[in-house]
Length: 381
Length: 157
Image (cartoon, rainbow over all chains, first blue to last red; front, side, top):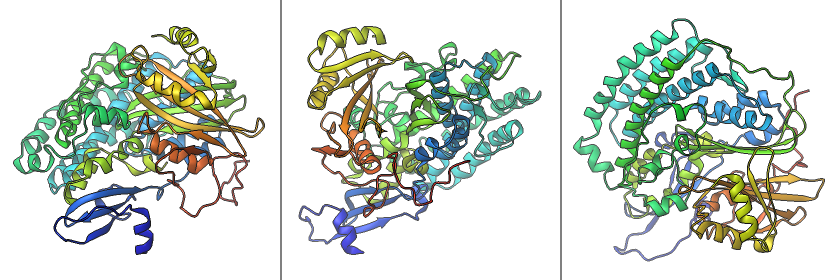
């Protein structure tokens, strides 16, 4: 076993204090890795010299499975790619398919999609906030975050019957229309939720222990971040405008007003602040979308069997809760995709972990890993 | 730049380097390049101010057993100009070899490891070409179309 570990970690450099180099396995079963991720950490005392992520423990080859399924069948699998933010992934695939086949979803469906994707972003960021604070030792925010997340899941449940994997956003529209009292319940939730964000901020943002653990830790410089493919809130924490909703608008994001949240320091604390501010923007987007919601059809007229044109291909991107989510589809004239590729934010964000943790203490790995908002099924697919 | 402008500009600037540049039916600009000009083209697209494709959004491969080729497809995005470009390079399916883009975009490192793992494309010059998803002692390339699935994949009837 030791031979195997040593063969995967490049050993080099002399220790300054005469301590032995020490190789530690973090995971695959570890509460702070948010799934089954294994990190081989090479330590000098308590200082991290190298972190090597070992992926593949959750690899289900969803891309291969999708090649053997029809386009509507694939939607169910996209739920499992990022189960904390399933609506976004549902939509990422639906958007690519619609572009491939020239399908235009009706306006009501588009607004509904926006409402649910932003609600999903709230739910995802709440879970992230709890897990991130939990990783670095503050267990209370986890309970706070899950308390509000439950109410969002209730809204999802009353609409599509599911609480985690929804299969709600379909090609050409959505599965089912909302119930008559959904709008009032949603507004009631938003009114309840907005002051709660202040509560989280009171609890965490300027908490001295929290600052000690996050400020200045794991700095992503703008150049390194762009070059290494970091995306989403993690890159916006380094001062780069990279929101796909602004740069390549999809749905009706160009018709609502919202600010792109950018912080400049690039440390764990900035990434935390970006996500907290994004929650407020999401609330504002949901409010505007609810106002614009008008009666109408929720599904486009489509042929009974959806076939992509021969030799067609599309790469479309959306801003999921974790960052840039791209779907690449190649059509071959049949009802099944010839190739389906999911470009996931967690995969490319995890790549910088080694550079971010080098020279920090072993406990800082948790802070950095948590602040990247990584989720393992999205890394492994 | 819009995709049409991008296409006509690339046609002029890289006349000798590229094979074709087209606008697809889905309105995307797609460049096909021969393996020997691949890295040089990407380097220029990344660095020259008018293009400035500083973000490698995705890198993957598509298997075409009938044409006996594996196409490596990369998608570029510019955070400055907000334009998107697809670059394709073909590799021989029996012995697929493509130069690495790691020295231009570091993010290519893991993307290429994934393509190596699942398609068996060897990226020449890559600093750390190991399997990433499958076990290290795994022999097959699962995303190739002729992958013998050993009964793992249940196809719907």
